[in-house]
Image 1 (cartoon, rainbow, N blue to C red):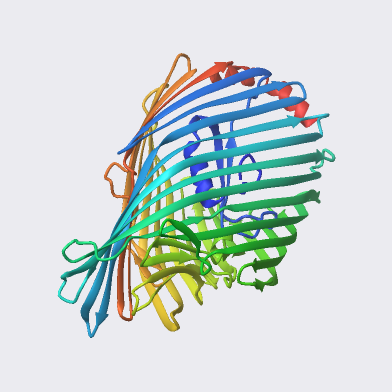
Image 2: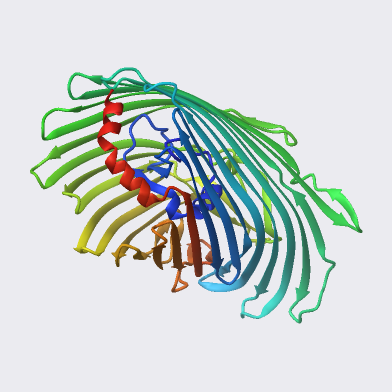
Length: 633
C-alpha cells in the first residue's frame, strides 16, 4: 500500500518503484504482520509506505539526482512538489530513469543411468539490458469541512528499452567429450505503460469515532515486446552442421483492473470497536502471442504456439471484525472475511475454456495479555489466500533456447495458508515467537524434462502441501546514544510434498537466517548504516536453495541547515547475492545459477525548496496546542 491505498503493481513493477524511492521522500513504513479482516485475504503481510507531505501552508519542493554505478551506470532525476492552502493539499512527483543492466544465468543438467552420467547440457547465458523511463504521481486532497476528505490519485509508469542476449548451450557425451553446441543470439525491444486512477472519500461522522470511507480505483497495464532469435548449430569441432533457425515472436499483454470498496467503523461501548465493509473487483487480461518461423526470408506463422488468451476475474468480498480491551491486561480482535472468486479463461485459437468459481472464508484473531509492565504475550491465527498470477495462468510458451522454455498453467488452483504463532514481547527491545504455517495447494515452478529430446519446460504447478515450523528472535539494542542495532534470527523447519511428472516426493530441510541493521548517529548532520543478511539455504518444492548473504553500507550528510542531503550507498559489497538451486530427480540432476549487476555504488543529492524541514519542525512545535484543539473539535 502507498499512503494507505492499495497498489496494483506487479512484483517486477513494485520492485522498480521501490528502487526509485529515495529515503528522504518517506515519512514512515508501517508493517502489519497480522492484518485484520479489513484487508484483502491475499498475501501475508501488509506494508504501507507513507510518504512525506507538506504540513505547512504554501509551497515546497525537493529536487533529487542519483548516480548509480556497478559494471554499468544508471541515472535518475526527480522532483517532488507539495502545495497546501486552506482546504486543499496537492502533491506530485516525477522521476526519470535511464541506464544499463545485465544478468548472468544458466546451469548444468546431467542425465544419469545406473549412477553414471550419460550426457550433460551446460548453459551459460548472458543478457544485457538498456532502459529508460519515467514514473509520476499526482495526488489531491480536498477538505470541505473538518469531517470530510475527498481525494484523487493519478499514477503513471512508462518504460521502454532493448535486451540483447547470448544463450550458448554445450552438449557433452558419456565421457565428458563435447558432442555439439548451439548459440542463440536474441534481440528484443519492449515497452510498458501503466496508469492508475483512484477516487476516495472519508467521512468522520461524529466525535465518538464513527467513520465511513469509500474508494473507487481503475488501473490499466500494457506491456509489449518483439523478439528475434537466431540459433546457430555446431559440431564437436566447432563447425556449422545445419542451417540456422530464425524465430520471431510478439507477446503483447493488457490488464485492466476495476475495484470499489466501502468501510465503516464504529466504537462499541467504552473499549470496543466494530468494523465492516464490502468490496468488489473486476480484472480482465488479454494476451495475444504471435510466433513466426523465418524460412528462406519469409515469415511463416507457427500455428503450434500462436494463441490468444483472454482472462477475466470477479472477486466479491465482505468482512466484519470486532476488537475490545477487556481490562488493563487483555485485548482481543476477531474478524471474518468472505471472498467469492469467479474466473474465466479462454484460449481462442485452441478453443478451450475454464471457468473456476470458489467461495472461501478467512477467519483471523489476535489476543494480547500483558503479563507485567515489561512483558506482553500475543496469540494469533490467520487464514490467507494466494491466487495465481495472471501470467502464471497464461498457457503461452516462452522460449529461452531450443532446449528450454517456460509456459503458464491455466489449471492452477489458489494456495491457502493457515498460520498461527505465539509471541512474548519485552517492552520495545525484543521478542521471541514460535509459529506454524500450513499451506494447501502451494504453487512452485515444476521443471519437466524429456529424456528423449532433452527439452526442459518450467511450468508452475500446485503441490500437495507445504509446512513451515519456525522460531524467531528479534531485538532492538540501543548500544550507545549514537549506535542502535536491530537484529532478527529465524529458524525454520520446512517440508514440501507433491508430485513431479506423476512421481510423489517429500522434500524437507532445516534452515536459518540472520539479519542485522546497525544505525550510527555521528552528530546532528552525519549518520550511517550497516546492514547484513544471511540465508542458510532451504527447500522450495523439489529444489534445494544454496546459502546466500548480503552486505550493504551507507552514509548520509545534511548541510545548508538541512536543506541539502547527500547520501552514499554501497550495495552487495562482497558480490555474494547469487541465486543457486539444485534438484535431483529420477534420471536428471539440475544445478542452476543466477546473478546480476548487484555490487553497486549509489550517490544521491537532494535539495529542498521552500520552507525547510527545520523551519517546519519549529513551527509545528509552536502551534501544537492550537492545531490539536482544531482537530478535537
